[in-house]
Image (tube, rainbow, N blue to C red; front, side, top):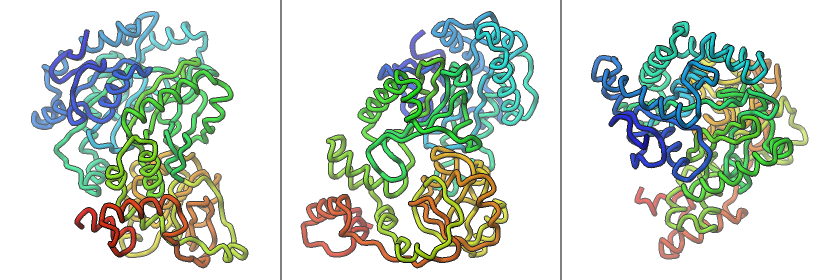
Length: 496
């Protein structure tokens, strides 16, 4: 089978030729990776048109769409040599949302779908590890009930139908609607539904899951940046509930998989001409990539990466300047804590920097309360054990976000980088939630939280070589005699 199972049910084999608006971001990235011969589990997609038909038809899955799914599934069975939901070598799948515009964590996913009593027994026999089979089954049960809202039926095909409907319904979930409204994203696009063969990061001691940024999304340095979680699966690493390991650990324990990951990352960055955020799984030492997308980054990283990519010949000067907004420069040149004040400042907590910036506010540990107090005009720092997509509305209104668990690729870190909100993660259990009601200052560039209000001093344009380079480019484009700050010159350039 090549390309098409049905006009709106497409096998992702690298040859569909369809745009992101049709395939959704997740499936489009799979299609791009397969075209580049990057190791990706086979998949098919129900296009965004299906979502539109679903809502136009009173939230009923079109019969002609569902009737095309078995043919697409047979492609996954053929490629993997497995049988969906049955047999000695069963095929399990993930069912994921994917809008054309990236909406991290806003919609729903079901993993390990196709699980039955027989499949669990087959996985135990095949792996020789009943604990792995039990873990996989329990993950499926919990996630299916959470996302779909009912207990999983015994029939794998009914599981699949219900999961597809749940993903389509998630397009109009409260958090997704709020996310689109806050960012000016249209409600008309709809989500695609990607169905992909599972690979198992929880299989054995040479398995795991991880996230790789091709360049550092926090500081803007050119070095790869990421984390991985041995014997992890799916949302484990981004949930923030587990402390992941640095990628250097993967390089140490599985150098072959690490080398394959770096090779794929370079290929994807050069193809996209932008910094990539890559989700990957290692199954028994074999690397699989699940998704790639342009990375959400701190304002500082956006500026520095634009300069780096131009110097490396991947983008032009004009493109580099197009990627930098005046607000990015203003954030990069924002005030910082006076070093002299640090001698007497009291450190409350330290953690991993997730999005740089300086902010002062009163600590609140409940997301709803934080949102109410921020809406009332109070400067609030939200402190949580970890954050969840339902917390995003509150996070967006706070001065800073602190978490006790999770790493630099957790939900809090990714969401705050996108929103440009100072954030520190992984401060340690009991460290920041116990400061409720206190006034704290968050230095999220350094990963340190201080009591009270240390003295803050202004930044300077003339101290940074990347800033000097941008100044030179702007003077050349604007004729050499333009006056104003760099942010003002960028606004002149863009006609604002």
